[in-house]
Image (cartoon, rainbow, N blue to C red; front, side, top):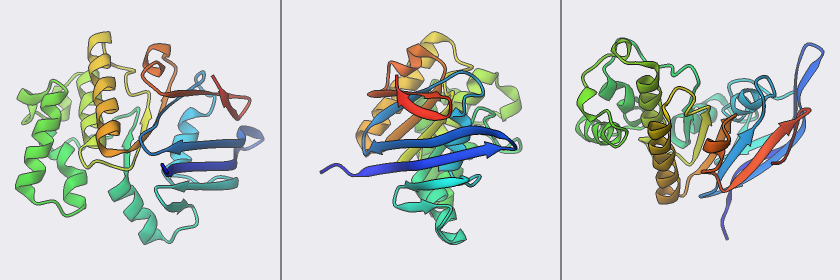
Length: 222
């Protein structure tokens, strides 16, 4: 039986007097690709940040890749993010003093991968995203769309159990967006990972197996 990689149960989150999420529930199985639709400010990014353990929910429980988010000890939470999670942020968060191969290799080095293997796997991932000749470039030398592809490569290179993608095609042209989405789908299929992609793009959402929408803080079928 396929196991649940992510379970969000009765999760609520508010900022001051506004409930961004209210009794939100979501389950994603291994190998499943889920798109989460919603307008800007609906709570998509907030949910991803809660799942990643970057901030705590006010109510409810989250279990991701076997880790009880918010209740795990700091070492277990750090190990989850390091070993089991891939996160594509809207703001990219590339390290400006490292070249592209070094940026992509960071997750591999953190889990103890040998430097030569980390470099080879990072170079291969960049090639698959059309940046194979730019490995020695620094982030500041890239366009926003190119930086987004590097962030995607970094999120996938260590074959995580759960991939969280926050508007992963927001800065990409249609052809490059399709290439990136195809790569995400391939990695999910090959590794049995679960994908939760927050997007406002109906085109990007079409690459998912299942679609949900955040409406008044709740997660409902789209």
